[in-house]
Length: 151
Image (cartoon, rainbow, N blue to C red):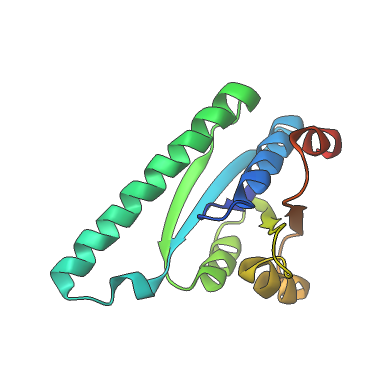
């Protein structure tokens, strides 16, 4: 089964990317893999404190994922899979795409309110010529109705 890989982070634009990925998965019979990356700089504390912070970050990610997962199940009949990695976000996204042969499309949301699309879109679009899958960039300004029309 072809999976749409979408990144879960604290950005507003990730919502449109999630919507698009789940709509496309529903219409194409595909799956959705949700990737969240914990940056390494969050744990540069003493070992004990770093471990507690790492566990807190994982718990926040799982809680955030469950909100999207419930919506994907109820609205689109899609059962998403969560993957949590630690490291530099762009590097970990590329690693996940290269390691999982079922990923067919990488879906990213573009920031609507900044002068640029956001750091992940900027970094990964530069690597798009060497990606083993297509990169879909979903504008953060699209409405739910516009997303439904194009998906």
